[in-house]
Image (cartoon, rainbow over all chains, first blue to last red):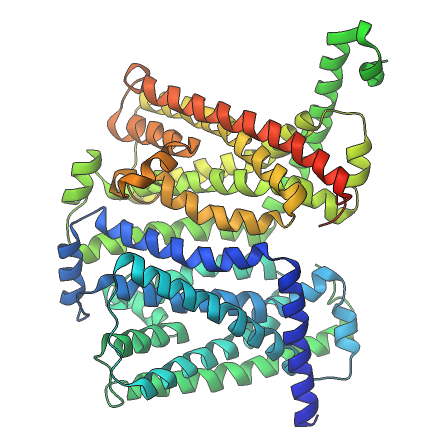
Length: 277
Length: 293
């Protein structure tokens, strides 16, 4: 399939989702409002236990800056982007199944990977600006302080974090459908992912055994990198391993995703039961 | 003929009651079967177990991370409860009831709309509120099961062991909360009638209710301007009753004012939901959007 055909499929996915998005504007309010409230829940969950100074001291003890609000906002930002991609890219095929259009998609002479990529990229565009808006609102509301010392490094780590999560959503898209439990799976992984990636606390606060799970998830590295860059403490040298890990995850999940999407197509053709749900 | 109760005033009360009972029974039965079938799908059963476990675990890690003991200073000052984790266990147990109330009301209508049966139902001569009550109550039955399952999990992991009298007070509190949440479900259904996409609305309100009702942290920790909002939610009072009864063994007499606030907020939501549903249904008919979703 040529690059221009790929581009057309990706663009079609973005346009289709844009039209759906403006047809149901209530979801837009949800995307803006949700991350703001979740940051509030995280902040108050700490300050209801001990005074803010003690919370800051605990973060400093674990090797982070004293600005725990910034830590929580950035964690929620990455997590919200993940949930967007999980829903848009990860659930792309399942949505077609629900809507009864899966067979048409499967028969179309096009790349299934390009189709999922279009859905994921729309998730990034659509989720990206709403999450950014939530970040700005919560930073003002809760008084977070960001120190961006190297803009190029910031762009790099954000781009790599998003690339790894897009690749993960490609993997999820096929994995969810093959397991035939797309709805429950996509919903139930959110709480464990929030827990293991350290959205609300440093990963180092977890027992060592559980940290191994954390470091098997690309979002953990994304959060570490983004937090360091926006705290002004991250440098190319200090984040070299994290950046490499993000590149590795992107390649790994992309390859695995492509293999699983092909497997899903084979299953669809051989068994003829893919549309069952 | 009871079916003709609208046009037979002489047969009055008895026929209306029988008609209501029939509507309730058939709707409740059908909805309960659907709920139980969905609930017992392996994927959703796993979800029902995984989500609370990780919510408990998150609270445990935060406590460990802050290194401030079982009942950290500020938390104890605000609540007087001996254990933060027990507090969270009870909050998480209520999460299913809250989500159920938010989703089931709107979903009751959305389900019919997307199945193409809402136009027919809205033409049928039965009481819409009895139908809605039966449908959402069936939804809350599974949330009720979730509540006790989460409580059992919490008791197992974090030693939440209520006394018999505390449990009785808590049970009454839970039942009243479930009834009060029916009012919330009516409001959600009313909004879903015209606004459509009730899930979007439920997803917006779900974190807001977690924030305001004190599910994960005491309401007193919120800024003062949010307190009237928190007090307007029946769940806040339901949670308060259950926590006071189970964690501090408070009796009915001590919790009477809280029971009063729960009954009042529940009644307000019921009335608002009732009126809003009537208004929105009329509006949807006028706009010709009954079957749209």
